Length: 404
Image (cartoon, rainbow, N blue to C red):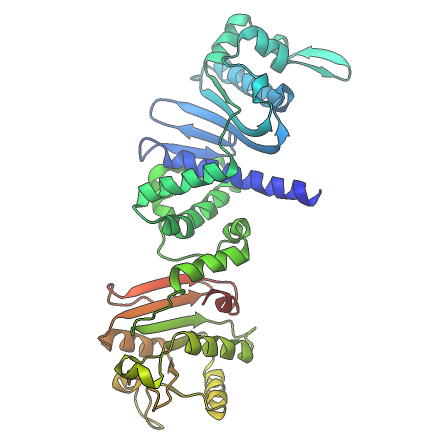
């Protein structure tokens, strides 16, 4: 597979996922549902009807009748099978995006056109008529056409995605960034999870359940979402949204990082701490009473590694405090909340534990902002819900440097 065809294939997958997300968001009732990869790519079930939809993305392909011919034959076979079983007739929909050639198909399709261009084909140089093999009359074919919708002018990849984001904004009452990085991110993961379930019942979800399961307060790391955005663009968007302020207010900012002790490289952690101190501190002489520096808590860091890290920082002359005034002392919130100034040389405030973190966030009175980076599940939730709390899931510690 060439690089170009590989990209088109991946975009085709995303196009179908986005289409599925769009259709579930557009369901009229909370109890209405969609099923993925059942009769067709997407099956929609409302209180009054069922529609089986095949949706394809052919950005590099010109429309020809042969492109959708197999799908039409499959739908006709399904139409006959359920009618023979005495089941209610369902609707069928074919939609696709093509680079050109839309003028070749004039709608609506009549029976003669259906038979000539979609149901008659050659196999091993033998002409076959699918409708004759199924024993269907012209009247049967006319009934089939009455429940078939064909759209070869489906939205482009970009236009469809933009519509998905607008629908998510409307559903959750949020900004475009939140719609994409919180709700779409989770919706994409959910739709992919549904598509690989072995049982049809497990590939079905109601609008109500979809909205509930896509609701998250954390920017979760979804490899498909990051693959679609591109890692650099993903990190850049997070940086622009949360960490690009030029005129920093003297807030109490808490940066929480989770590390994997089995793969941790101390120099990487020190790099992050130095970047944080440099970017999120203001301790020059002219800052006066408006000076400040960030608090840091490293989750998952073994106690001996924390001690080793502090020793290195102290040896290098990097000023920090941790809320313990002497050996054997209890943690003192007043001590760690001491203002960082040019004179005292404090560049960072290191919190040793979740308990110390919770006590400090709860006790300080200035405006507080908590930025939590987690590898797995979230590990901290401020008791005061008025505290700004940003949660971002990452794969590795060094990703933080590309964000902050």
